[in-house]
Length: 255
View 1 (cartoon, one colour):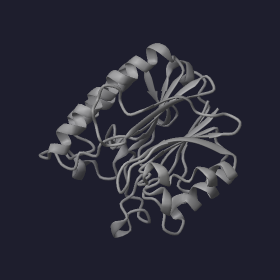
View 2 (cartoon, rainbow, N blue to C red):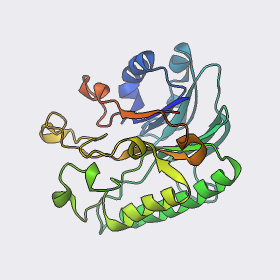
View 3 (cartoon, one colour):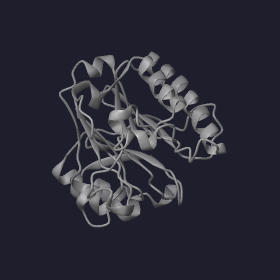
């Protein structure tokens, strides 16, 4: 199985990119984040035309997540949102793809350590961990993929000293990420790659992509049965070079 995650930062704008990328990278499942589309505006027909089914949870302007599956596979047993959590933001979608439980997550950014959005982020992560633990109890073959808005350690930052203590890499956020790993999940990229300087997001401003000053905040986390069969995990920077790109690059895991 080949699974990818990609924050497309508006599927309406980036749909041609998704279609072109899937033509060259026919993954079995693609988790999308930041659709920025209402539920009834999702381009299901266009994706079906290229051989992909979809489940999605849309939201205008912000948020929105989806899981695309290569035909004939279809997303099954879909859950939108964290059960029992009354959250108006569309940030999570879970579905079974074959014998793998796939969760697409657009985790909270947090804005700044003094913001109410930071407290929301930590609470959201606590609820995510509880949800994933419950899902793992029923689905031992599980992949949690998405934009986590957390750089897990200093290797994942272009300027660790400059970013120290800031949102996306604060101690509390990194502890929340470690809690997910403590459930028995493996960071697929780090399972196979130790090096620093590998990023999945670059700010649009100040030529940050051209200067390769980015952060690794998009991740694929795998349960032990999937991690045991992991063959590769790469960050595909190619779409970031296209015209009007997302500020994120796809992360692709093969297992």
